[in-house]
Length: 143
Length: 433
Ligand SMILES: [Zn+2]
Image 1 (tube, chains in turn purple, orange):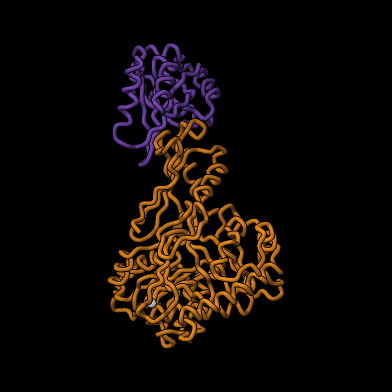
Image 2 (spheres, each protein chain N blue to C red):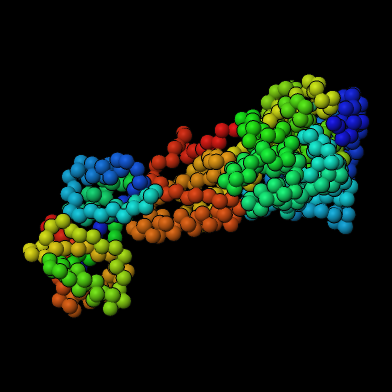
């Protein structure tokens, strides 16, 4: 039920992001979603791509430090309170959201959010019990 | 003014005769009392009796910092502990400091040499000396202190730190001589300015600065900002502490080495060959009068040259030029000795991996700053910014705890640290000194 995300360490300096997108373009990898968390000195670039394997190899070849992280992609009702409902649910279950960001594509009428939880398996149970729809990796990558 | 006219202006032939006599006595004594020296000389097939001229010293093996470490803590002492009255230690490189000891006579010798140094730097018995060298295991504070008392000056043992209080003391006590590291002095000047205290309106006339490398430009800046005459002092705890050599304020051109107590040589650091007078190389010292901790051909790792030309001040003792570098890669940051290898072990301990790293030293607003650049490889990388920041903080804290020096840790991408012939460039020293 998990999806995999690629994380890249980047120094906070001009042109680094373009370097990454250039490498991925060159390798024929399509970026499905992207989020950058940064400080004044460095950042972590998180990517959902259509081909993890290809992306990882190309980036490592390009000298970047890359890691893979399990995340959960959840369909969110595209209406006021849709996201709040999910966060509320998780908070009540004692599950922390390490970070989250939006996926570019909608799934039908719903928005898609990417979550990194401290207890991903617990989170999946809570979400499933509430009838929320989790998108599996292989579907997410090609949505 | 000269504190000890007889010895400090002694004709060189007479001085060299004293040196030879004291050298022979020192060698006899260390061979009798320090197993390390006895074994070293035996292995080299040489006895003290083979030393007939000062030049013969070159046949005796060197002593290195590692030798001192190997004999930690008291193995190099030449007297029983009951005659040792003082112990100092210099900052360790692998967690092991270099320990030195003094007999009562050594303490007195040191105080006398520091009194000589203070007078060469312009101080008199009528001066008030603001001593901002650190007091403690470091020899700077107490070394100057005893010299000032020996001279009969009034010493303010203010030590390092608490800068604002120091400025108030300067304003109220009106000290006339300042002794401190040059970088701290410029820091004092800035803080004084922020507090609305003008250094020029204080009572300082002379300043004696050392314990870290500094430049002619810094001298001019200090002299201008403090409106004083500034001289360079040299010393290291292994030899005795501050007061091994001092610039005279008359010439301000090289530091007179107190040759009746210390015999300097300049060697090629790579081959160990003694270099001809005037050539630049590594400074080596043999102590001639020390009792508790004599050193024989101790390699200081400091790069300099000796100037035998007569000086306008009247002193006949040879002058060493400003130390221009280190023969190994040791860094002196705010008076603290820092080896890249120490940082490496901290990184190893903190992250359980040996990342590529680089030390960048800058001098910002007259204070040395150390930045440790650490390459983030897969083992160090975390997907979470918070954990990476925590890693930076942990490394920085461990460096501070282990080395006693503050460092900013900067995580960088792999392969961004320059490699030279496949080897990472470990140190970039941007200080213009
Ligand atoms: Zn002179």
